[in-house]
Length: 498
Image (tube, rainbow, N blue to C red; front, side):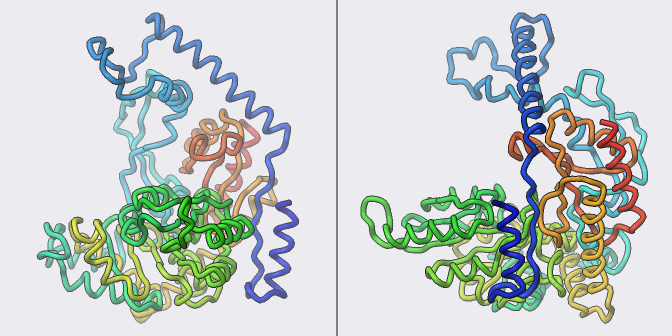
């Protein structure tokens, strides 16, 4: 079914009305044998987990995890013991693959602090040794602006000397700097919209602004793989939430039809507002939203569209303007454009952009009213990097970075496929999930790659479906062809060796 869908979309992109370029995404089904072996692996881990819990209960095996005090046993428990089963018996075995302390700029290469565990990852001991020249395939440094030298770093340092690091106030009080105003005008100009508003935290940009845009009597249609910040924002809004299958336009249209035909539950009154929540690039799947089709459905059923471009802004499109630029669409067709500065711009925070809603958010968004203003050097990093992308710095370095990222992405994906790996996502997505499947491979692959001075992110259940564990590579314009070739080669060795 997926293959036929890919072929159909590819044909529509050449001859249809919605797409102006081929649009091909690959999601190969898990092989039956691999699925069976993966379930068996989790089953064996679960059996041994219960055995070890039995030994811990009788104090035969020591368990350093936090527990309720004996004198508190008659109180309502703070947590259910079974909820911690996965953490105790599965996650702890491979915990050394996450939260590694970095002690350098997260550029194409980075430095990490070496740590050892003598109690199977319950605690860690730092040796004092620095692991140098680790190829960084885990950071969202898509355009390579996470650096401590160059125009961005120099401008941030200069602004720090003038404004300091903290603002110590909200934007509505005494924390609205001239640099904040310039940044928001630049963001609006960059996106081609009427106005924009910046926030100090990307997660809060979603979770605190969606409740200001939708409420009781509204319907939110959310992609099943949307980020947690979108899910939290939808829940906090008090709206009715219905989930459609990932990037499945038939599923979305079915929900839209039902919403229009039946209205609100019990009363059958029309919904006050129907808001569609989607992402530009889905960070765990590497897929790109079918934006032309979403916009067509949104117009047909008079709904509103909220587009989260956290991973796509700067990383997609010939001008780095995100998924709207990638498809050559009009920004006026997207009602709410959201994005973050934490990835392609090497800074922090997020933005909301659009028409006729920014002034409303300035007085109704909790993140705008109560949060402290963005730090001046962070703002300067955003301004400088964005001007570089736009070419306003008088150079072509920004466009060269965009082009380099696109070339690196296509090359890396092509080489992985040629070597026989199963990878997910769109051909143009710099997020490249490589399937591992079995739980034992999650820890083994991460450790073996780290031994070879390559830092990768490995992901498993519950962040992914139980039989779809994976390694996730994030490609950067700062990566060289030699680095990517080395990663491909070592990945092949680690896969065959494990």
